[in-house]
Amino acid sequence: MPKQVDYESRRRRIAEAVCLLADEHGPEGVSMRDVAARAQVSLGAVQRCFRTKEEMLRFAVDHVGERITERVRARLAANPARSAATALGHATDEIALLREEHRAEARIWLAFVAQAAVSEPLAGPLRTSYAALQNLLVRLVTEAAASGPADGGAAPPDPRHEARTLLALADGLTTHVLVGHVTAEEAGEVLHAHLAGLLERLGTRP
Image (cartoon, rainbow, N blue to C red; front, side):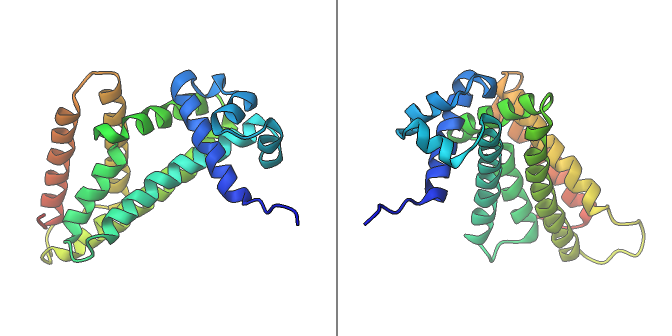
C-alpha cells in the first residue's frame, strides 16, 4: 500500500527550514536544495510542495505571520476574563516580539520585510499579515473604548487610527531593538507609555 504523505505538515516543516535559513543568510540566500537539506527531505519532496523558490518564500512569509497572529489569539483565549485594556496590552506585547525567545522570529520577520520592499510577491503576504493584526487591534481598541464611561464631550478616538498607530509603533520598536538602538526593556517602556496614554484617551484603565 502506498505511503500516505501529509503534504500540509511537510509544507510547514519546509517553511520552518526556510525561516532558519532566512535568519542565517536572508531570503535571497535561500535555495531549494539547502532547504531540503535543512528540512531533512529530498529536493524532489520540496519541489512537489512548491513549484518555485518564490512560491516557497511566499508560503514561509504566511507561515510566520500566521504563527504570530495565532500566538496573540492563544494568549487572549488563555485568559478570557481579562479586561479589554489588559487584552490590548497582551496583544501589543506579542506583536512587538520584544522577548528574548522571539528574537529569532523578529529577525526572520524583518528579513522578509526588507526583501518585500523590492519583491511584490513577498509584499502581498506581508500586507495580509499586517491587515490581520491591525483588525485584531481595532477590535481590542473598540472593546476597550466600550468598557470606559460614556462621555458626551470630546469625540472618542478612532479605533482604526489608534490600531494603525499601535501596530506601527510595535513594529518599529522591533527593528530598534534588533539593531541595538534601544534595549528590549526600553522599548517595552515606550510601548507601555503609549498604551497608558491611549487608555486614558479611551477613558478606561488596565
